[in-house]
Image (tube, rainbow, N blue to C red; front, top):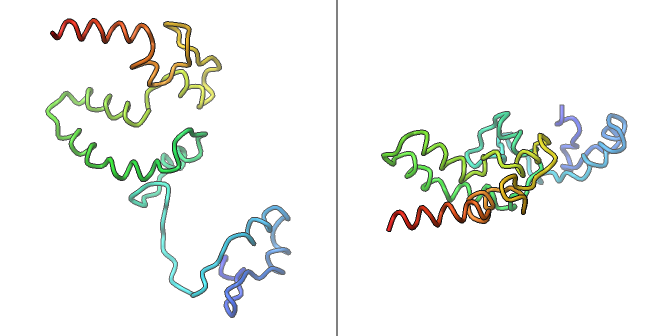
Length: 156
């Protein structure tokens, strides 16, 4: 048990036991882990999600190469009200799910598919210009810009 690797008198790693138990690489990693100065009861905490819930899905998301900012979980926590309001809107469920997927960047753009190593080419297939990410699909692609322009004129 991990408890056996810790000298409880001085709250330091039992270096000799760690060295004799683990490989050099693992030993170096373990000895870099800071220990609490005072004993306390263990508690189960998962920092991968704001609510502390562990799941294979949120572990998978954390292990994916990411271009998300380091404050992603903070942003996710502060956007809870947005999602509550979204789910309470009187809209078709399919539309609410699409808005949710867009807000979380869960749309299968070529850039997202490339991150999952499903495609190699990320260039937009419509304009053959920039990489096909969410901003490009919705705002930057000349085809999208033209479509938004036509929609805007038809609403006036």
